Image 1 (spheres, rainbow, N blue to C red):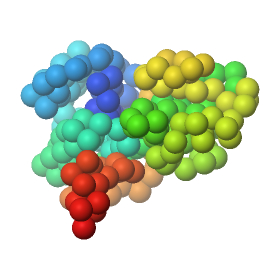
Image 2: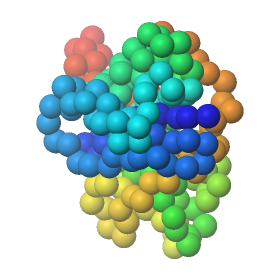
Image 3: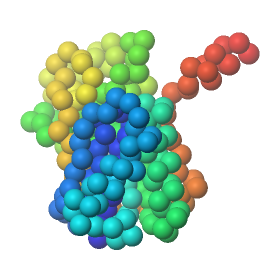
Image 4: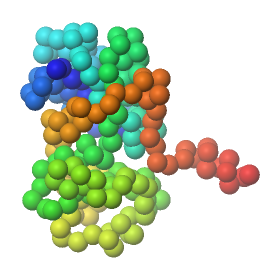
Length: 205
């Protein structure tokens, strides 16, 4: 089975081509602008580097959040379009679970994404990616009060005592490769947070 993994939930973009349990090619770069116009070019580059064709892909794994509103939408839209046009299976992944594949000697892994105003998107996972505490939007100080030296903080953002991610795409795909596919039209972003416009609408009644 050949897989395409897409993560555009942050400026640290990941696109991987995997054949069973082997990474054929992987793109991991920080992109601060023009992602919408570049993502298809990046996917095409990855396919060409491993002498593959998009039609040879059996399943598409796409991160559908949480993370950047714009970034998540870009990845989800691309995955939906490819899956629908070529009748490919598509499976959503959590951005936090992907971060939690980072190797560590600690018992638990706490992936973090800065959500501003003192809040973070966070979850708690064990080394087998079992979910100990569900992904959520939480105040960072409240989260910090719940954890100790058994927990490894992992984030692209800067937090005290956090380490940078070293993502293992094989680990997350092995866990989810037999997940039930979803209808591409029902694949939606998973933000865990209202947009600023939605917050203002609720505030103003």
